[in-house]
Length: 72
Image (cartoon, rainbow, N blue to C red; front, side, top):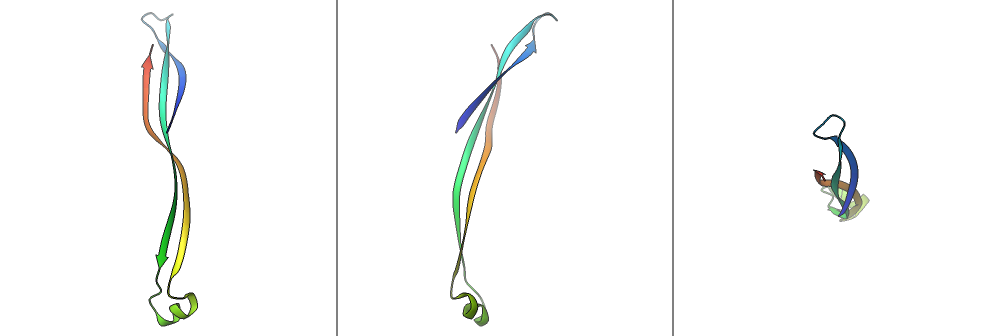
């Protein structure tokens, strides 16, 4: 997990005032390897592919977990 902070300005009590606020976003990085075993159902499928075929897929993604906006 990682946090990313970005400052931004929001209006204050008077039109000329601006207040600095911070937006915090928490990201989660996910890495996984998925493995599937496939068993052929027919005689011809077993002759061509064997009794079991294993497939692997690698997954890598980043997701937003939460976001927070706060003025100082």
